[in-house]
Each structure stands twice: as structure tokens, then as C-alpha cells.
Image (cartoon, rainbow, N blue to C red; front, side, top):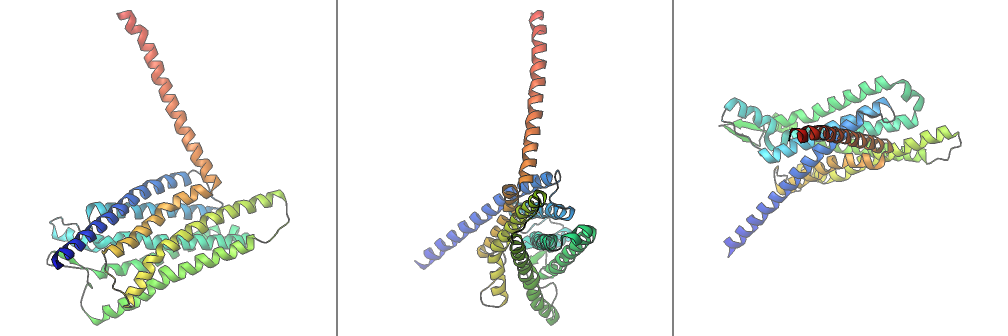
Length: 332
């Protein structure tokens, strides 16, 4: 009786795990397509300023990469055995347990942090913002790359390849590496969850407070203010979805490192966190189209151009057929 109950429970867990993996792979495929299309659209238009446009394009690239990696990972599996020891060892450190996926996750969080700061600086210090575009671009990308590498590189030391197998354990033995990862857990929590959440929430809250102040000015300034409000709506929704959908993984990670709950990499509960994070990457293009008039107009132009091209091809084919028909009849 106990064995049957245990077997039934294991079967149910396997079905749940399969369902979660299926959802993740489907979301990854859809997210890759949507973010690739969004990148193409953003390359055809400009959003507010040069740095804002670059950061939004970067977000599309990062989200497309994240979705593509998780889609490929769920199809190929979290472990790849090629039979070549050198290649298997390299894949152990690069691919094992969705490692490259977390590179995209960290980069996405840091990029949205920069987008939030960009909107804060643009609204609160508009004159300096216009004059310091190059410095802001350099500063934002240096911060993004530096912080992403700082948080991601230690992941390579959380796996070990020995006896032709890849295992989830420290890359080498010793008390030093254990202490390092105890500190790293707090740094990850601070710089990938707490600090970005503080910057996103406080920046958008203050910007919304500033924009709610009544102003008297010309129609041109009111039009600019209206465009700024729409862009703030876009970035605040993107940041909001990221914070809400990353919250599950953040809380589980903090509790796991505190020893309150076990943190099992690759478990169903851990995969649910990946599912929610992937969903946030899928939603970003939807938010941009839904809230940005400029993006919607560009999408409409692209669709109209495709229709014109399709109609011209159809017309050319019809003309070719109509010219060929009399020749065929005369030959008969």
C-alpha cells in the first residue's frame, strides 16, 4: 500500500515536472520570437533619447537571449554528453543546470535598473541629461557589464567535472571557497534583488510624483510632458513585472541560503521560478506595444509595407499568368 502510494506520488511529480518544462520551453520559444521582432521594430524608430533607445534595444537583445537559452536548454537537456572529455568538461561549466540562462537574468535586471535611472535623470535633471548623453551611455554599460560579470562568474565554481561526470559542488575543496560563497550569497541578494528593486521603485515613484505636479506652459511643452508620461508608464510596467515575477525566486533563494528551506537546483519548485522569470521576458514586448504609441505606429508601418510587398508580388504573378495565357491558346 505504501509502495503504491509512493509510486503514485513519484508519477505525479514527474508529470508536474514535465508540464513545467513544457511551459518553460513554449514560453522560451514565444519570447525569442517576440523579442526579436521587438528589436527589429526598435531599430526602425527612436524612443525619447539616444540612451533610452539603446537601453530598450539592449533589453530586447537580453530577453531574446534569455528565452532562446532556456528554450534550447529544455529541448537539449540540462546535461549534454558528447563523449569528448574536453568538450564535456567545458559544457559542464557553461551549460549544466541552466547556467547560461542566469547570465541573461542578471543582465536583464541590471539593464532595467539602468532604464529606471535613465528615466529619473531625464525628468529630474533634463538640461544635464541632454548634454551628457555619451557619458551616461558609457556609465550605464560599464555598470551593466561590470555588475553582470561580478555576479555571474562565481557560478562557474559551483560545479565540478570529475570521472566524466558533472556534479553540483564546489569546483575545489577547502574552507576558503565555502566562506566565499557564503559572502557571495549575500552579495547576489543585495546587487541582483535588493538594490535593483530599490532603484526601480524609488526612481519611478519620484518621477511619477514630479509629473503629477500641475504645470502651466505652451502646447509644445505639454506634448513633450505627455510623451514622457507614456514612456514612464512603459518602463514602470516593465520594471513592475520584473520585480513581481522575480520575487518568487528571490524569496526562495534568500530562504534557501538562510537554511530555512532547502534550495534544490533543478527541482520542480526551482523550475517554477525559472518559469516566472521567463514570463517576465515574454511580457516586455507586449508592454512596449501596448503602452507606446510610437512603437505601435512603427509596427503598423511594417505590417502595411509587408501587405504592399505581398500585393505587388501577387499583381506581378497575375500579369505573368495573363501574358502567358494568350500564347498558350494560340499554340493550341
